[in-house]
Figure (cartoon, one colour):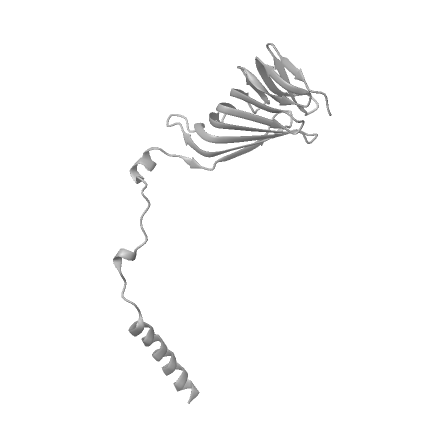
Length: 187
């Protein structure tokens, strides 16, 4: 009796689902995104790309962006927006570089960061410049223009700056071309 009763009950329950179900309203459908698909196909882009590696002197780098657009002629070269570069040396030193936009050559590991470039280091520097350019392959990044900010000794201003690495695997900052330092003694 149970072998006959259970399938009949299951069939009755299933049929009530169809009898009681609401009618589908086509206006309640999920809206499609307002993205031009043909434009996205022509202008390829990477969303949230991330490039990591180690320089020849063993400084680790982690470069990420909000989005990047590869060059049509050479896809290893791309323009990017909202970039963040993290550099870590062998002794635990760290620098975080943030910029509005930039150009990246993933083949040569070169980069150009522009537009409100900010640099913060684990040694206490907070710096601003308009442009940083250089290579992550051998960690040689320069600011060819004016740089301002604060450091462990006080406020500083310089005509240019270089981030490089020593033979022992530690990164260093070198300020040149007219360095002004307003010394602020520790309190």
